[in-house]
Every structure is written in structure tokens, then in C-alpha cells.
Length: 284
Image (cartoon, rainbow, N blue to C red; front, side, top):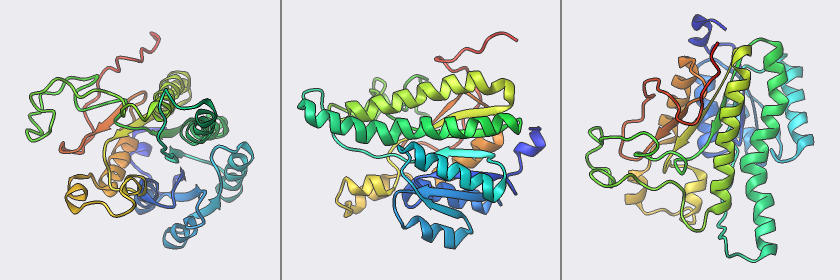
């Protein structure tokens, strides 16, 4: 895919998972606004509303179910004949601690790892052969700031955000805290897939990156507050539409193997290309 092609999303076919509400909905709408043809899926029937608004093809599907994944991809092939962009956005959250009883842990594992990691894995595996055959494509895995903070792994001087709580402090710790071991494990593993796929698929013209945003106004974040968050909290949160614009900028940029952070209080912008401390490509 040439640089000129990368700058144009008009007419491209994009598949967005978890698109009924929140960030996935914003991603899908941003792609539609750029002229992309959409296929979207979600476990929620409300995904049909997005289809009515954008002209997308909508499928009710569970990303952790291989048969559902195959059904979505087959529908995309039947409708469009190709998939140019895959946005692995579907995800869930639940509290889990290392000290939890084993029966609870097993249920939490299936729920959290199923949606947050298995779904990414299954959709990638289903779509990658199509992208290889068409000699290019983009995969964006939607991750979390638990794996990239406003101070790690790249040190920031906070000149762009002097009011950030971590300005002048040691780097903010990675991870989401003691009740998020499975959530964090799935997201770190998702990042591992991002890097492995970026390396393996570069010769095929396929770019793979991750978005690692912090607190963003979304269905998931509002659920933490029983859908009645304090106004002062909402005022601090990043907006889903701004993260979606960051995703569009990333697709146009053409880089691969990167994970892009977005932190509360900092400008939401694509950073300059930089060496990924966790990914080294073989010499050509």
C-alpha cells in the first residue's frame, strides 16, 4: 500500500468490534466520516443503531466465540470482498485479585481473557490471511494506559501538562491496581500480540499498532459509577471522539509496532516515531 493510499480511508473496508457503545462506537463513526465502509459487531443488539446511522453492516456477535468471529468475517467478505482495517476494540472489565477463590478466578479468567485477549487473537487470526492475500492492511488493538503511563516506558518532562498529578513526581506506576490482575494480564498479552504480529506481518505490508488510552468517557468507565459519574470526574475524562481522531491519525501515519499513549491532562496527539523498547526488527 503506497503512502498516498494510506492517506485515504475513503472506500476502505473497516471492521470494528465492540462498536455498539463507547469508544468502539466513536471509532466506527470516525471511520465512517472518513468514507470507510463499515462492518461492526457487538454482543449488544444496539449495534443496529450504529448501522442505521452510518450505513454499516452490523452483526450481533461474541468476540470470544470462534464461530461468531468466523461469521462476522464471512459476512464482511460477502458484503465487501476485503477487510482493510481491523479495530480490535471489544473489551470488558471485572475486579479480580490474586487472593480470590479458585472458582471465582476461573470464571473471571474466562470472562476477562475471553473478551480482552481471545477476541483480539481470534479476529486477528481470521482477518490476517485476508490482508496477506490483498498485500496490506492495518490492525489497531485497543489497549490501556495500564501498560503505558505518562512516564513509562518513555520518560516525559510534563512540559505539555504541568497540571498532571504526576508532574514532578516519579513515573506513574503501570498496572491498574490490586483488583485488576486478570484485566492487566490480558492487556499486556494483547500488547505481546501487537508486537509479534507487527514483526511477522511487516513483509506483507500489514501494520499493527495499539492504542493505550487512560480515562475516557465511555460506557465502561461510566459503569464504574453506576452510570451516574460526578460531573467533576466527567470534566477530567478524555473524549471518545478525540481518541477516535487519534486512531485516524495513526492509520494515516503508516507506522507499525508502536503503542500510542493518551493520558488525562496531556494533549491527545500522535507522537513522533520512536524506537519501541520492546520490539526490535531483524536487519533487512
